[in-house]
Length: 244
Image (cartoon, rainbow, N blue to C red; front, top):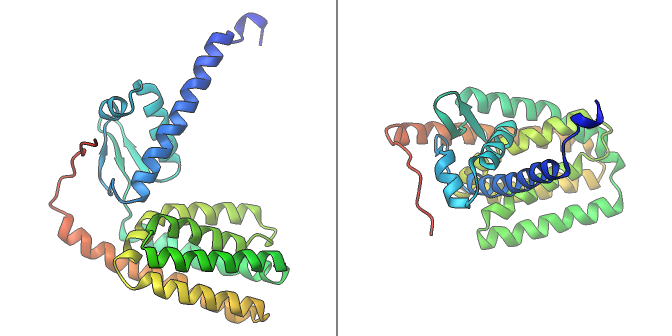
């Protein structure tokens, strides 16, 4: 690259500003999707979003592309972006992969967990209980991911960890909603505590078996939930809400 071909400081600064704005837009949209404000199939119109955030369409487009890479949004040529949903087949695939990969990670990691790890894991469980009582579903999703990823941190399998982190994110908003409307949150709290107890006692095989069953049961419950809502919501056309 020649000196003349390098971007000017002004151009580079403008590009950085766009990336910073795009990151802020992506974060706001991400939380609204994860919180269930923007449900599956919801249209994300660039003009409307640009007007709401008071920015140009460029950072909005970049934000939507980032969310598409995270599996939260689907961008259709000539049709625009919508919040992605999960089909029954996709749910089956996600939870089959989780049930296959996560027990392997736990088996490889559990014996390496340190006293500090267990202290933090127990803190997460205590925080989870508090958020459960307060019905703070958003915080529960964050704590659930932290709990699982901390259990697997010593597996020495960074690629598998990255895959699992992505799987957890893809099904997070659906799992939050499903658990908040059923007795799943209390059950998850109980099973997480038992999982931690088994690991602390060195009962790794039992812990891996419980983890696999836990994941499979959540997947079955989520498929039942989605199937029911596809029947009741299938005729509705989502609209862009007006925010104050």
